[in-house]
Length: 322
Image 1 (tube, helix red, strand yellow):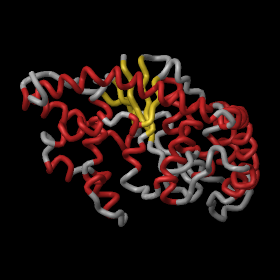
Image 2: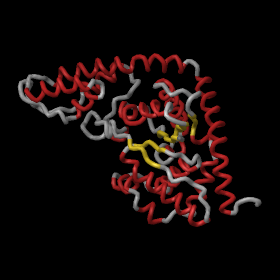
Image 3: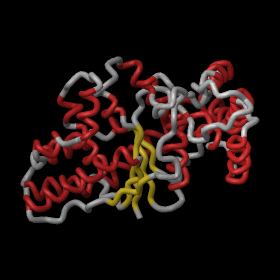
Image 4: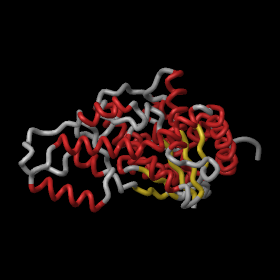
């Protein structure tokens, strides 16, 4: 079974990235042939600073390795180290209906939020389709908000196969990561860099403490029952066992639990959880050449896997000599 997923280096990862994707990716490397990429091509729709993009991409590689991704068991590569993706994206663009892209809810949501309109943002699903189809991936683990993009990938693959009369591309199956569907931010909305409501995984302890203590709560007094669906309780739950969650939620519903108590406990649990990862990351950061070597080897292995599919697509479309 071939597994494919990626994450965009649009800023320093936060605990929403970790619980929403990165932790699951690490677990998946033992379930099949796993391929994970750092989507720096995709980041070009929002990041305009070259040095910033390189730094974010390198930092993300460090974070993945610190979280336990093993470049010997899984393929980890930088998306821009595989320019073949851009060729396949163009090939797929020629069979992608405009209406399909216009229906993308992610595109419409970003436009509604005031994002600058550019062709890269509009054609984002086609490059994502190339990311997936070039490996004929069987399973693509994604969050619920990316499910439509997977459906579009299946439509694009089907359109190419139908147009050229060959089953070049396998239709991938999404695997929705529902264990933690949405990690709330410190303001109660989805944790997102664009909202400025994140808790960075490897931030200095003082910054993490400020973020945790700043989690928005209501004015319910200590002795009154608490709403356990609030962001504070949901964030605390990420670091608790089922039995611990059941016990605290029961106490909270009866009253007598203060928000300050929960925040202090959350801070202690968060710091303890990421302490060994932080130590591993610091050691890796002192060996920057090893990180680049791992990415270069990942790109080499990714190219070997991708080449047969790209050649089959070129041949089906009549590109190059027979």
